[in-house]
Amino acid sequence: MAIINANQTPARAAPISETSILGWLHKNLFSSAFNALLTFFMLYIIYQTVSGVLTWGLFNATFVAENRRECFDNSLTGACWAGVIDWFDNIFYGRYPREEIWRIDFGGLLLALWMAPMWIPRVKGKILVGVSVVTFYPFLAGYLFSGGDKGIFMQVMVAGAIVAFAINMANVVTGLTKNMALNAFLVQMLGQSKSSGKTRRNILLLLATVAFVVAFVWQMGWNVEGVSWTKWGGLFLTMVISGIGIASALPGGILLALGRRSKLPIIRVLSTGFIEVFRSVPLITVLFMATTMFPLFMPEGVVLNKPVQVIIAVVLFNACYMAETVRAGLQAIPKGQAEGAHTIGLGYWGAMGLIIMPQALKHMIPNIVGSFIGLLKDTTLVSIIGLFDLLGMLTSISKDVPWLGLHKEPLIFGAILFFILCFAMSKYSRHLEVKLSSDHKG
Image (cartoon, rainbow, N blue to C red; front, top):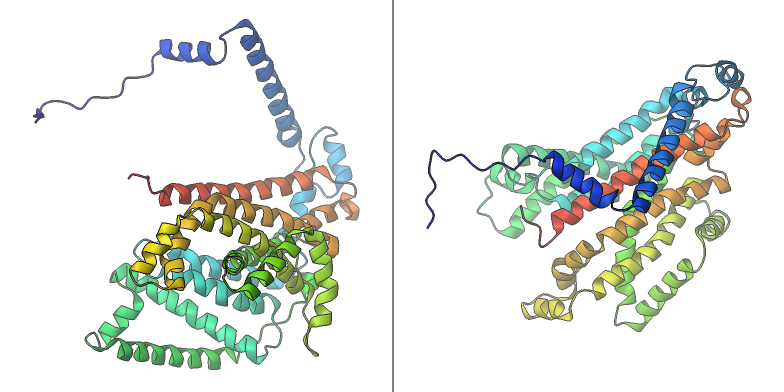
């Protein structure tokens, strides 16, 4: 066994020498006359591109102007970012009333707080947090954004969202302070730790019912001014459509994939037919069909506005593509996993939920995130059916009289926004891959 001398200093990494740098450059960039010529040529191309972009977009650009003519008077060769800056509110919020924009900001803050426990290690029940967000948040946010009168169904869902959010926040507090889940903390506080499981469940159900009744009575007094869906637009509308689509497409795809693998012929045929029909037509066709056909199938007196129709179409379309991704992941799991789960007494749903599906989803992360990124970019198609999403607002700048003909700058700004969103999703998916990798050490 080796003995470490206490006075011995740990070995340090040798500094990179000038010789090693020159060797790397010679090996990778200047190993031959052709490679050296190609290196200088590519450096020249990069220099010309970067210098041209910086000169046009920064050094000669105009950031403050009243109209496009003032941009031309200031610089004929620079970008006119003044039009983009002047339309900032429209780009992000559409034509939403300016005095009501706080509702959109508050809805975003609410979502961030609701999902924050997903990234806090000491908080328990992360799956329930995700389920509560997908189930209740769209209704609470929908009423917050649209306002107006609430039907009985919307009142029930809003009250449920209030209770779910309050439980989530209380669970965060107990997780950080007591390092335990909220249900265990409540049972302990009420002195029922030694009671039977049925008794504890009844107590928790009673507390949840009381909280729901209080929330229902409280929200009945809410009176939020109505905002027509025709005022929605910009990045706000893009995030609403893509956010609900992303949150709903994966559960829908899992159900369709399981239905396609079902042993019941009726379920298998219906699931397969549903998937193949939606995967055989482009999204723009589905959007047009949704806006024209959905009203014909709705019960009398039920009217769906255009954003709801579009969201349903986007969810169904992407759920079918997600179903094939999930099915491929399930087929990659050896049959021995299911057989082993059955031998320890797990049924179909237990084996699928606890053994098979977690392994399959881990392998499907790249494809799932790729589908989510495609969904986010495909939302620009809604501008064709009359919704002014982010792309619709960007193209509208060029039709505004003071900024007539301003095309390049708005579209470049939109490309930067989409790049930031897609790159963030891609990097987070890579983080999940490393974190969930079975051979990851650390």
